[in-house]
Length: 205
Image (cartoon, rainbow, N blue to C red; front, side, top):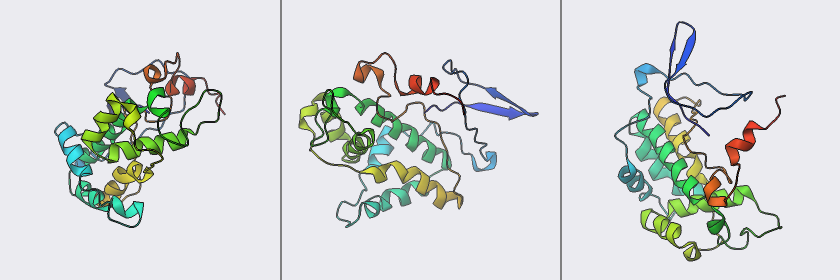
């Protein structure tokens, strides 16, 4: 996924950020409510991100309930902070997207010439992020220390739920600078083409 800034004026959109050379690719344009100040926050940082995740209620019976304190806390912040939370989350997941980590997630680990679930790996990376800053950087440095067979996909929907509470709307959408989809990190997988490069090759319907 890709997030860019732009200005809409007189029926035209001017892109303010530099974007990759993508041709013949369908895009989604989201018009943000200027009065609500929904631009990505420049004050919400890593420390606030990890602090919010420390509020996860691991004693809850259901995974969806585990994230409720974080959703509540994020919904009480500015809309720009909600967007920035999503940006930071996507970046953290992107950096975990590597073959070395995929080979250490447990029963569904990556193996050459064997089926590998992109979604399971994504949800496994979500669990690593959800476990907090110390564990996250530990795994990056030493993938062999990963707690096996753990997934936590509710992490992906925190921003959306916080936005819905904040705005009473269900139109949350953000193309983040980093894609958290499996195989997006070309360096992590030693690939010539990553997820976004593959998207470029998809035929138009």
